[in-house]
View 1 (cartoon, rainbow, N blue to C red):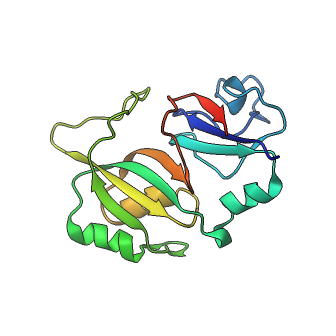
View 2: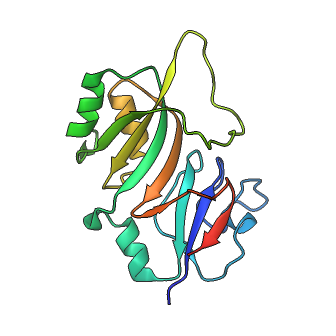
Length: 182
């Protein structure tokens, strides 16, 4: 039976167990939170992104979660600068042209700030003259920093990025920095 761990990764934590090549580094890694041997992250979540990270000891499951050919849906809660107009949202839904090609269509909806949102340390910058808003964005590919590049391409840079869902798994019931085995 495969081990599957759901982890609500905090901001500024690397999605790996060691910080190889950076002896004495103060950067936080998964080893500060998870003490289960033999599991590895299925996919990436940048250190400046937060939310759901799935870890497993099953190589096939790891590939099914992370490889783009499987098109596993991943949903992100995205705080963006400004309030996107309908045209910007439609561009995200249709697919955005990035330097490495056009993205697959995304499911995009406006949303209220998540109710169970934990404070981020350090906090997201706040500007009195520029509003911010929240979007729910679901993608089925996983290019490097894809959601951030997509929102920037439509004129609304990402301020905060939280992965909420991978397939049928979510961060529901997991406080930031907590994990559970499923």
